[in-house]
Image 1: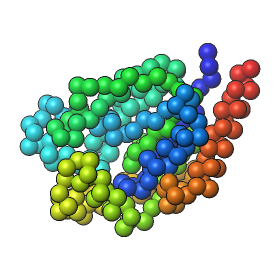
Image 2: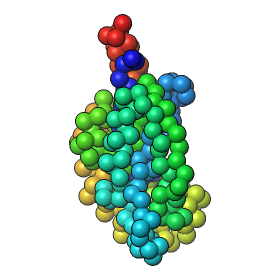
Image 3: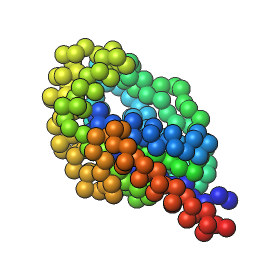
Image 4: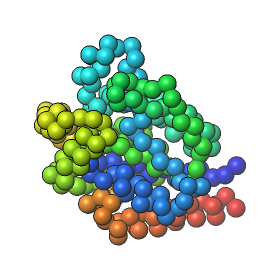
Length: 213
């Protein structure tokens, strides 16, 4: 049996550049050896709730995530077993009937605003990363994403940021920085940090390969 995959947790506020960092690292390994698991796919199923009630969901709170399922899937991937990753429907505000079949890989990157908040998830990680980006850049990116990809109005995005996203960031996201092994300022633009991360991951893989031989 192959050695245990390397797990990297990449956290940070909304619009911090977590996805850019993750994709930059992925480019250095290729599709055959690296896998990205997005925490956003693991929002709780809300099909049992009326649609009006789903609209009030606070997606920036730890309780919005089905971490039990995420941990179950992560453990299976660590055992080299495939999983069916859920898909979230942001129009209906609940989990879709669709799933994505995911094969285990040598490197697993778990990316999301609160992946460092749950101790159970942290205990499965080999490297914990926090992407630290100024608030004005993060809100700008959030506005652009939500308008373009989720059909939101400018006013609704700003109101949500002021009343929900920012308070949740200060209460839950920012404090998880203390758990990080590595803090990356400026997200995907920090090429030096990304190169160092890539080198470290390759080093861990090489060590485990040697130990297994």
